[in-house]
Image (cartoon, rainbow, N blue to C red; front, side, top):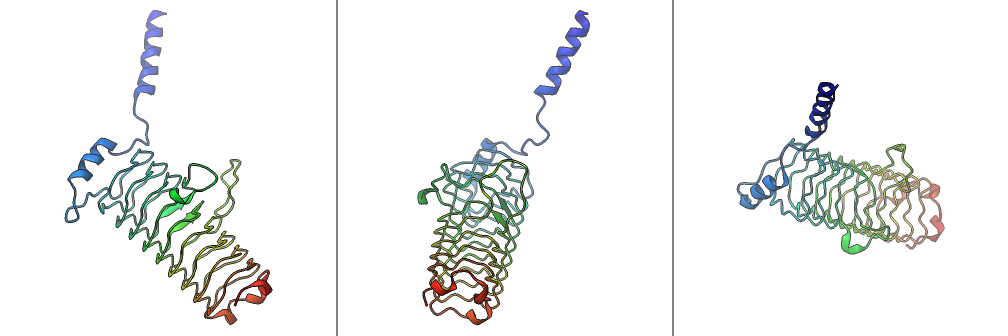
Length: 263
């Protein structure tokens, strides 16, 4: 009996002391040391690496290469990922509070349900910045309220709902309330149901964009291009449509509150 008990204990320890199958490829300490030594001419390369659930908060990535990497659930709070190559990377459920993605390559990346704020109030001080970032073809779904997406490229990006996960969820559409999308490229992007209330879309390229049931109440689209955009059932209550191009091709008649727009 004693032998069996000892063997059972050893088996238990073997199972629970072994590293999980999803353990990251590197430790935070190893990454911090390498990033400290890196510079613009010799950026750190963590492409196609497993970086799941690592606490990388506050790190300066110095233009590192993270193409195709898995950052699911990683904590990036306050990190500087400016000009980093994150093409094809997975940032689902990552914590992106106060993160700078300015000028980063996020083409084809996945940003599904990231944690962008510490509270439901979504304070502007915690909003992530994607100014000038390349997000073409990216999949985004979550709360990006007050985010800085000025001049960002979201051509062909998908921000529409991706279906439920089975959990009780309060979030059912992408939120960009008060976001700065001035000069952004959103041509052919799927913005179905997207919350864009009071967002800055001045000079944005929305040609061919799908804006079905999107909430554009109070949004400023001065000088934007809506050629061929689909505004079916979109809410335009108080939206500013001054000097908008292609408005006659944007299914404006099928939008809600179109008589309340400011032109």
